[in-house]
Length: 260
Image (cartoon, rainbow, N blue to C red):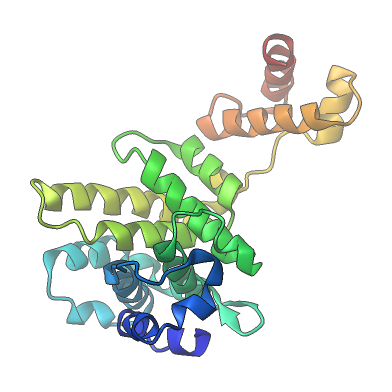
């Protein structure tokens, strides 16, 4: 199956899996027999994997929806290609595992379906995709929202963003479809831009105080509370409300006093 995934023909392949009953063997716990499978999402995952990672592929784009995505996300093509070409599990690349995540998630509403295959990246991709579908507010978000997203889903969040775009690409025939699509693309762009251009500022900023510093400042032993306070400090730094060590000291004292 993973060798077939490499071919960028997964929509057609999925139809053959279904036709010949292979899905019952590949995903026995999902019981896919007799279930009508929509292959559009899988085909669109292939489409965006090519559109956003293969050089000059955007020249072949015909529709306005894909063209807008290529225009807003094309600057990250090299970074995305390096990201998705990386092998992380046996011979599986992140792109292969992203397509696998779409296949697995298509078969069931069980959010842990990829986890059952013991593939952490695919599991995180499914989790971040479900999170985006449920919680994404493309009209109002900030750097702290981006930080929290990647703190929860790590590298799998990038795959989840691509799965989110691929899924939303199907919905083109509703009122204001193009406007809604553009908002989603810009939303995804901001997350991807933060990951690849502002990683140390938004995704993994260094706290002004270490865990040991916070222990001494609050005179408390090591434990979950230190991580809780440390994370709150990082979010304050991202917001820009804490910029110096002295401000960090004051923030930690006040935060611990009223929030812990």
